[in-house]
Image 1: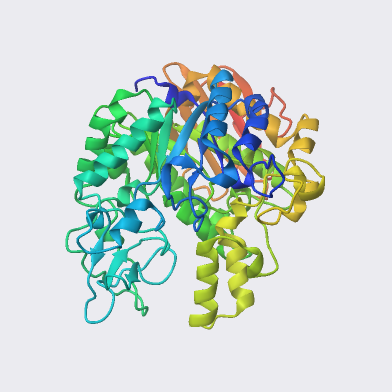
Image 2 (image 1 turned 120 degrees about the vertical axis):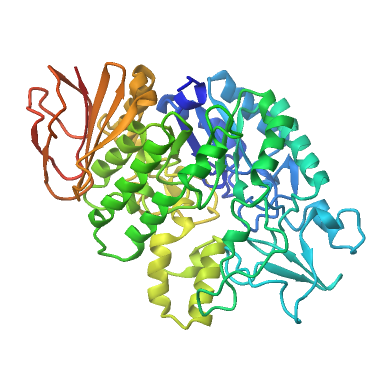
Length: 561
């Protein structure tokens, strides 16, 4: 494995709308982030991934961009953004921007032109088709419910939108579209940013002809992913992007790539020939959705699946491509509520999950609030939710499928993207110190207990535990580059593995349950002495590690000599 700064860094994801509001309008902003940079510096992170701050009508919270080279008014100005970048770089923090180029907003000048007439020069910037038998051009379902086609009266045709109606898909088959995007990317890189997180980047190539999806449900619209995910020209487009833009800069690039296999990832992020530095895969997150779907579901019953998925990614990519490691982001429920315990063992399980993500081979991503153990929220009514996908799902389930609203709300509580989007909890004052106005979405009511001020005042807090994890990663190359070997593959409560780099070896022991299982060291692991690198309970360093009774959600990392 070649050494690289983007392998050794720890990334902190900021959802700007919910991070910190500097001007009292209830919406987080760029000046708010600037005011909290010293907090991030104290945590020890190296890179910030900033969710979109570009000009947008905000139908999908900034993932519908109307001007790629301007800033959304609610967040500030381009000058504010330039100040933020300068202050980050002053503190040794790099900035990765979100790149959303599968689609634009329907208020982008390209689309406004495109819909004017069939012979407009911008018509072919998007994917337009005539009706078929008086209906949509095919049966694809949008990720946000309903048809993936929007009808436009002006030209009596349909445009493709895999997401919201206000997010028309760009036509990457058109070389002019690609050139415009590369020029825009170069503009940001010239400004000094340190990379891109690329939104649904493996959807930019669609199968020619846009065929109907097979009917696997009773619904009128079907999931057509096989025709637009990892499409036939994906690698060609990304290779061109690398040649024209990415190869000229020393940057971090990570692709959001739903439904990729390890083999896809090795092709996209190959150590020698790849086009991006790493990808986000979702196999483990699909397990977490199941884990949290039904109250009372045994999370340990899913641990075997989690081990199988994570171990396959660790094993297959080792020496070939680089992993990104995460358990939560702006599109997922809170990690401690999904993979841990957001009740009596919230602190212990949050530390365990941090240990897990920082001890695997790959670049760890922390989502804002993970470092203080923020949890899912359970609002009383759908009116309190803001996420377009959540509201569409609820409406379809209740109005079209006739499901009980109370049952649907339980699913919302477990799975809504708004779980991760409630405001950052800074202190115990009104609105958790996020704003002195009315917040755009309600604060989680548990903010009086769970907040940054409390965490900073408590030497045993999740925050300081994360700080230590980040510091250990800097001090021990084995944590970054060591190879991974799973232990106790069939244990339903304990996830244990070793990391090895030359003569340096770590033993990681994680109890993913509320029980007190016995850890028995497998045969064949020899050592003369042990050192406890980090643990989320007090540990007697003299204890024999051949047999350990673990406490609920206990995490231990030993260095074996």
